[in-house]
Amino acid sequence: MESVTDRACAAALYSEGDAGLDTGASLLAADPSADDELHRRGQEFLRRAWTRGWQPADVVRTVRRELDESGAELVSTLITAETAGYGSLPPRWADQLAALPAPAPRNRPDRFTYASALLELYRLLLRLPVVEPVGPVPGTAADAPHRPPAAGEPRMLTRIRALLAKAEATGFPEEAEALTTKAQELMARHSIDEALIAARTHSAVTPGAVRIGVDAPYESAKAVLLDAVASANRCRAVWNSDLGFTTVVGFEPDLEAVELLFTSLLVQGTAAMTKAEAGQRAGGRRRTKTFRQSFLMAYAQRLGSRLAADTERVTAAAGSEAASEAVSEGREGDPGALLPVLAARDVAVTDTAEQMFPRTTTTRLRGATDAEGWTHGTAAADRARVGGGGPEIRR
Image 1 (cartoon, rainbow, N blue to C red):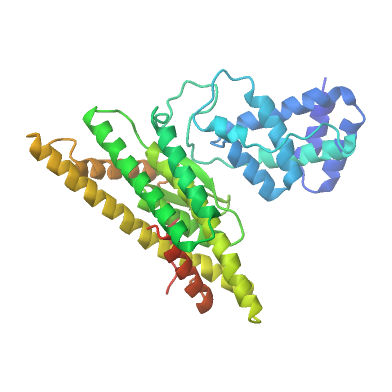
Image 2: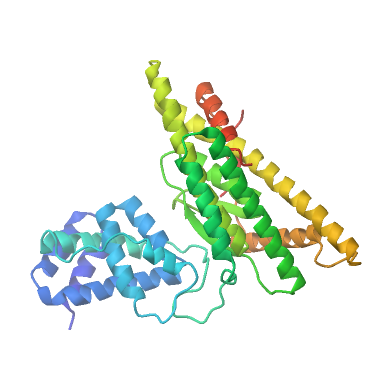
């Protein structure tokens, strides 16, 4: 016999418009005994999303983007319940679960409104497309595309995070410049050390991937900034503008560096843009949208060259150091020599990215149109110190 939940879902989930939602919500509101089955149905839809390549942070971000914050709270409740039954979860899931919004109480403000919101959420979950997986599905024995972080990484990441937090908080541009540059140097050196250790121990570690949200407004400029950060940290980035995220492919230490640095630079850039914009308004200027777009695009462009230069400098110094050690120890031709090791890792990252995204295209974005915004954005990037036509990114 067809249950109330079956009838409500049939009415609401496979039709367009509000009429089906109202019919389904009315059925559910009139039958409190259907509550548990209704929530189990949502957990089933989430399991389907996991098999399609989605992860908790992806789902919450999409729900917040397509619906609203209350929808994000509803899906957070379902995710918490669905993931509670697994003995272990894939890498990165624990952090994503810890960052979930507060769960939504049941049947608030009333049964009909709550049921209607759940059914609207289920419509969205059912229509999530297949995306490239960046890890195993929970509850399976599938191998992850990369190994978990090494035991010594948290201390280094804590130090880097502290440097970036100070850079974000300081009101002195010179201090922010020094702190951020030091953080990038630590990231680059840590990446090099991990690569050498992996080569000398013949580690089987392989590249992995992570998805990072790229939210409106000015998402194209943010995607360019993320691409610059990824490239400077030996990763590849592919932007999905329709779904609002970029997938970054690389080795684990580099992926963590990209996440930390992109988040910090976006905070620093937004703060600098707000300050510069306030000065423009004080002078009587009103075209803030073009100013912001041009500011962030210049900021991303300039940081790209700065990041690449910093990484090149640290790599050159480390290469000279490794070569000197090899000569002094009689290890000329050492298979763990730096440049061949880094070249091999670059090839591995590129191959993995091409396997995940065999049909990417390069898109030329619209260039900046506001000269003052570009000038201020370039200056802000110089102050961050890491590191005319539209840039190109993979998508």
